[in-house]
Each structure stands twice: as structure tokens, then as C-alpha cells.
Picture 1 (cartoon, helix red, strand yellow):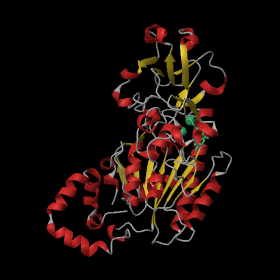
Picture 2 (picture 1 turned 180 degrees about the horizontal axis):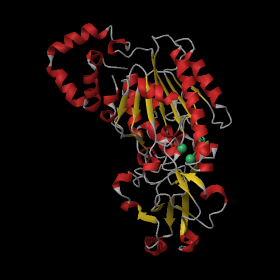
Picture 3 (picture 1 turned 90 degrees about the horizontal axis):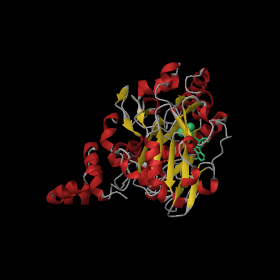
Picture 4 (picture 1 turned 90 degrees about the vertical axis):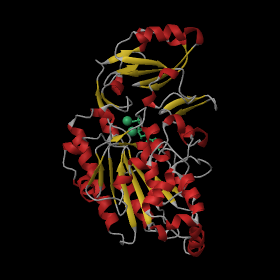
Length: 433
Ligand code: AMP
Ligand code: ZN
Ligand code: ZN
């Protein structure tokens, strides 16, 4: 619940509250008249209306997986253009490392870097649990023990805000014992149109059952990007189709009465780059797999746990190999924000931009078409952020920011109280009215 003091803050002051609660508390204890004012306001401040964020404020967040920052520049995208004109568009959105689906979606949800939330890759070994987390393994995906931090829906539910999810990494696990009130088991076959229908029907529920925060996920254009590569004309078609779905969603949201303060965020988790078996480093040409206790991950990032006696040999050999970088965990450059979590192994290998790395011949489709996972500063890994609604400025182009900044953004719009996270409200405050 909010403290009564919060209710008399202006928007700017609320921001300061978020940033420096101690300073503001001190300020208010020094202001005797505030106590009197707070008592007067106390009875009327139990709802959100005083701060302008009524119980009728909604956030719908759609992630369209693997939507590279520049896809919308290649074809006509009237849906996204509508948002840019009447809302906000970021120049690009920076993912976290590794630029994979699970770490990034969970960073969006928690405002934390993977080191701090624990989903350090799509697949990883967890020493505390002596268990492996795997993207395709439902039993690990629904196991709350893997998930650190606090996803935004948990933050909201704890503060009596009803939430819903038509898929999001983490939403199927009872993290801190809490799932969204309405949630779905991941099923890639559900048509995107049906997912949108459900979101709309959730918003049509009676007010005491209606979710104020809804997450929605589409697994395209990631799938096509992997299959065809990001430059293929198939990407143009899928981007047009996805954009038409965004347009439909906007039209249907626009039909709700204006007292519904609906804010729509359309974002994604990473970009995509072209790969080919000709740009491939085969680890077996340099090191013996038996020299490792464990290896995990997948192109372009390998997590390696060498047997102790082989550590230096492996490291010295891999240092000489072109088109990859090898780091012991304590050497990983600081800007990756990666390596402090015990789930990151003692050594990592990362292929250079557009290069691939793996064990054995680059057979099958895995090393052709497109992929992602590289350095989060690589241009092709950048992704998108669009937002529209009463909380957002109009026709505002925002400088690039990081996926971890989305959590504080939603927290702000829904007026929630939170612990500090890696994301910073100051990075996105200028996009808000
Ligand atoms: P990536 O290998 O990083 O491209 O991962 C993308 C894959 O993650 C897609 O095949 C999706 O179907 C899958 N995926 C996305 N969200 C979920 C989820 N909540 N549960 C299970 N799988 C998911
Ligand atoms: Zn993805
Ligand atoms: Zn992908």
C-alpha cells in the first residue's frame, strides 16, 4: 500500500521518491505542516486517483520476439507508425547479454541483469539446485527455484493489482509463490489472433476481475529470422503481418471507453544477424571435450567448466583461436554485466559478430539463416520499443535505453512500490507526460 505522503507528490516528486526515498523522508520529517496535511489527506488517499493513476490505468505489454531495430524501416508498418506518431518510439532498445530470449524477457520482467535474476542463458546448469534449466524443458521452466528477482506481475499482485499473461518467460512459475491471476501454459501453436482475442476479453471483465497489467508474446519474427536470415524477403512479409496485428490490437483497444487509461507497449528482446557455416569455429579442432566437466549454452555463447587440471591448457589454446573470444569468468568485460552469478561457468567463449561457434561440423539448419546471442552492443542485436497511451508523450523519439529500464517504467505507470533494480527510471522518464 502507498504511504499517505505519496498522494500529495507531484509527478516529479514521485520520481524523486523512487530515486531517493531517504532524502524525501528526511525532507518531510522536517516539514511539520506536512504531518497535518497528511492527516487531512489520509482518508482520501487510499485509492490511486490522487496521483492521477486511477484504478483504471492499464499496461498491455506485447513482445514480438527477435524484432530487429531496423525491421520497421524496411517495409510499410502503419501500426507501428501510428504508435510512433501518437506515442513514443525509441531509436533502438538495447538488450542484455546474452542476447537470447529467456535472459532478455526475464530482464524486461524484473529490471535486473541476468547475473542478478539468474536466467543467465536459454540453457544453463544451476549448481545450487544441481539441476539444468532448458528452454524446451517444461519442468525446469515452471520451477520457481530457478527464478531470482521479482517479475513485474509479482510486484503488482503483491500490491493488489490483478495481472494476466498470454505468455512471458517466468509467468508459468509461482515465483515468490505468485503467478499472474490469469496465465497460460506456453503453447507455440496458439494463433496470435487468439492471443489478442483473449487479451481483449480480459479487459472486458468486470472491474473487480479485470487485469491492469497484461503481458502478451509472439514468437515471430524470431522463428523466421532463424530460418531465413534477417535479410530474406520472408522477414518483410512476417513484419507486415505482425504490424497488421499491432494495428488490430490498437483499433480494439481504442474502442474501450476513454476512462480506461490504456497504455500499450510494443517491444522485443533482441535483434538478429546473418550466419553461415563458412564463418564457423569448430571447438573440436582445438580442444578435447573430455577436458571439460560440463559445457552449456549454444551458438554464439558457450559456458565451459574445464576439469581443473586442463583449465590453463584450454585457456591458452582458445586464446590463440581467431574469430572467438575466451574469458575466464572474472575477466569478462564489465559492460557485459555477466559472470558474477555461479550459474556462469568458469570460462566462456563468445563468437565474434556474425561468426558461429560449436562442437563438430556445422550441420543442419542451426548454423545457417540467422541467430542472436552476441555482444549486446552489436548493432544487429538492437531491438525495438514503442509505446502509446495516456502516460506517454506524443510523437516522441526517445534515445536508446536498455531492456532493464522497462520494469521501472511500468512500476511508475501503475504506481507501484518497489525495491531498487538495475533499470533506471531516469533513462525513460522523458518519454512520459
Ligand atoms: P531463442 O533460441 O532465444 O530464439 O528462443 C526462442 C524460443 O523460445 C522460441 O522457440 C519460443 O517458442 C520459445 N519461448 C518463448 N517464450 C517461451 C515460454 N514462455 N515458454 C517456453 N518457450 C518459450
Ligand atoms: Zn528471442
Ligand atoms: Zn531466436
